[in-house]
Image (cartoon, rainbow, N blue to C red):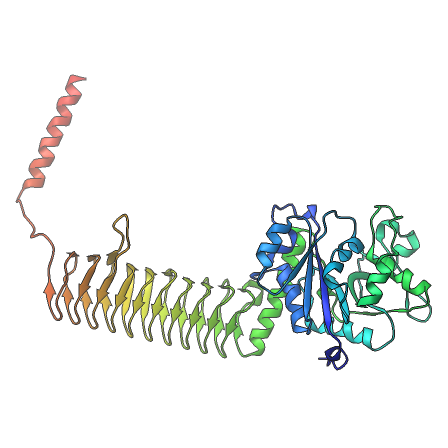
Amino acid sequence: MSELSLTSQTPVAAVILAAGKSTRMKSSVAKPLHKICGDTMASFVIRACREAGVERIVMVVGHQSEAVINALTGDGIEFAVQHQQKGTANAVQAAEALLGDWAGDIITLAADTPLLTALSVRSLLDLRHSTTAPMAMLTARLDNPTGYGRVIRNTDGTVNRIVEETDATPVERQCTECNPSLYAFHGKDLWAALKLIGNSNAKGEYYLTDLVEIFSSSGKPVVAQPVADVEEVLGVNSQQDLAAAGAVMRKRILNRLMAGGAVVVDPTNTFVEIDVEVGQDTTIEPFCMLLRGTHIGERCTIGPYTRIEQSTLGCDVRAIASWISYSTLDDSVKIGPYSQLRPGSHLSSGVRIGNFVEVKNSTLGPGAQAAHLSYLGDAHIGAAVNIGAGTITCNYDGFLKHETVIGENAFIGSNSTLIAPVTIGSGAYVAAGSPISGDIPADGMVIARQRPTIKEDWAAAYRLKKRAEKEKRSVKR
């Protein structure tokens, strides 16, 4: 990775263009706020700038400006509004009120290039500082350049001009070196040159690309170099583009996890978002979804078909075909298949949650287990408690939630109904099929089911009676 020896001495600001409408997205969501891998496209561009050492970031907004500002406020971002979409140069000019007296460099880039990396931003800054050029740019050599402006170079390799595709001649359209709109300027040169841009083009807009001719015609060279990986600068202009960018980002994320020692059985069918951490020797089976903010320890087995969101898992955890949300699992926990941990669940070490068990806002102590077919909501369950099949905590009375407390080593028989608020003491036994509405003392035993009444030959007599009634109704008809 290149060092920013010169850049570190020169303050850098960024202007991110995010004002466009983008009708091709066919969506009511503002284009910069469309998400890939758990974060907005604009946020990924911001990350790249931050990691590259950019000090100030101004985002130019226009279409749905309020939604964009509300979504990104708090990230240290400043906002400028382009009131009328009159082209990229007009958009950058909207930031002059904030950066007009900026003494350092200014880079301009688009909010719809979420695959851009800090390395490329650094290389752009290094390129500008390696010469006396007032403007530097990155280019991309594409097999299919349709939709991109073409970069026309001089014989000495400097850039002569950039031609938008709608204004290019047939010969110019054959050029495969394209403009992904990544520029670096000295601030004072940028603001002065912007005032010289006209709008004599097919769309009647003010193009930032015209700065190339403005600088070169005044004897100031514009330098350019191709990006190392063209995927970084591919813009997102449709839902298809968004899906393609998401696939690239997931591949990057999975490669990072595997480089750290995680085992991904089938990367093509594994979906991991940004800011997910997975420990060494943890295996991720196919069709898992690890959502943003999830942290998983070492030697775990996740999946197949497991979804984990904003949760922390310790080491040696096994989670199969289950959903885990905003929960904490300590070491050696086993969950699934077909179980759900809802927000606020904490499973201590050695807990076992089996098939078709739902846990919500509850704590289970070390070694506790609910093997199957149970609901545990708003409960505090002690160590080594056994929850029998079909047990539920009745935590809601129609108005308020109430807590169930079960002491350590208690045994809750199958099909028990624990009507909160209720406390069951340590070591207590609850007989199968019991509805419990009162507290049980430690080491106590409770049987709360009705004594059966047996009526011999009742069923036979009942069937005879019903048959006779049926025959009587048939005769009447």
